[in-house]
Image 1 (cartoon, helix red, strand yellow):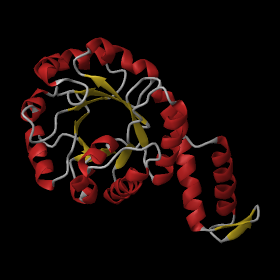
Image 2 (image 1 turned 180 degrees about the horizontal axis):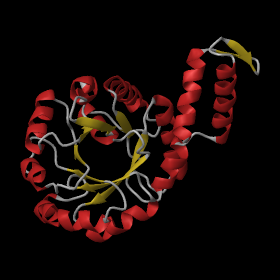
Image 3 (image 1 turned 120 degrees about the vertical axis):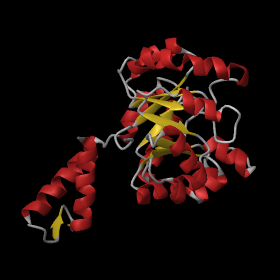
Length: 268
């Protein structure tokens, strides 16, 4: 489900008027958020507004709903309130296989996107990314808070965790979305982080502002140079009928051909 989602845009579930505008930037999915984007005093009102917010998107983009985490006072009511037409339910701080099973039972095995954003969640990601989990995202801010450390511009404190989440998602056969960039005015940082994420194996990036959506699409789309590199090698290897060859001064074998085909598939 999330394999082709290069951007997922968060919108407060309490703001149907913003939900109506969200598809204009062309996100791969719109996430109606009942968690971080909604203050505690407004949780009940946001939950009540969910059907209106879903209707406001009007099928212009797939809609996911992020509920509050397991163990919070709002979690069970959130699950019960998710409209049937929603494509997936996003569950933050999902770090326990038992919690996955409990959420799946409550939702009737509807698709789940797991928030991997605690230390335990990162370390146990492979145990969490099981059906009906169809995708995940890495939550850097919550991870660092759980770690009890500080957030830096270098991202050094989350580098290992990001890589582990991407690897766990690959083994599980689900797509992973990279962390949000909280300074939505810093396009250069967003692009740099998104390109790092693509290299690590992430499929796309979570966005908190519509202006970040086209940046995510740009960063996760193969460049013209990459496509040209892939086309040449894929064609040469096919012409050689699977034999290892030299092409433009480089060896091309099956491994290189697999990479080339993956680039061309992503470009398509």
